[in-house]
Image (tube, rainbow, N blue to C red; front, side, top):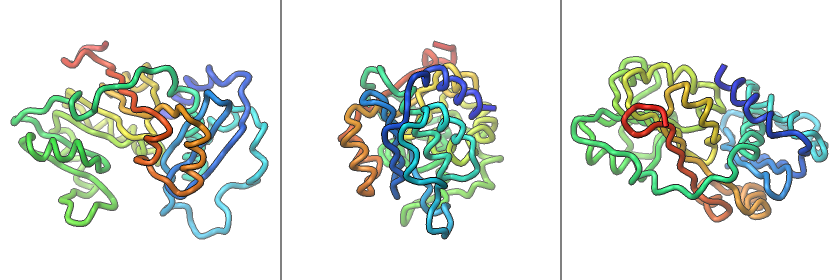
Length: 253
């Protein structure tokens, strides 16, 4: 339901827009509908299989209505899903003021238990220093990182006061089940360049803060993606956005 709701939310803004560019890079995927509508999403390159091509009809997408790509966000083909979420972000991640640093925006004290799904270095450094307990869940951890496996989420996430969730969980369709486990969290922060600024929807699922990216220079973003760039590289083509969905004390903003 979460994915379908966000697709419907984005579809309301897709009228009279057509695909001008689509790049499925090894690090990120980018979709552009117009100079002002460009979005990106993480590419699950390790999960795309061994076929020569990962998208049918490659080379034919320019000129298609924008709305045709949105349903791909729900696809079990993770290449299609990345395209779909990049298309959603091209529509939704526009017009937000640049946000404060995410590390400064999230409060943490010595009694907090924190769960992090995906690894975000600046926040990890803060939480490992300040939190009572800090759990990292990551399929491909950095060398030396102390991580927990996905099977432990059922036990540990309901204990957490703060949860940081990678928006790639939307792409691989794990976000809704993960959010259901965060029953006692006062803060649930969705982060990363794949984050859709779909506040009215994600608020209903308990998310309290969105930390995403607005692409301001579509030409540069497409070039970075085509040349194998990652999230840090895309920072040169956009700006960080931070949207609080409650007032910081658990009440809706």
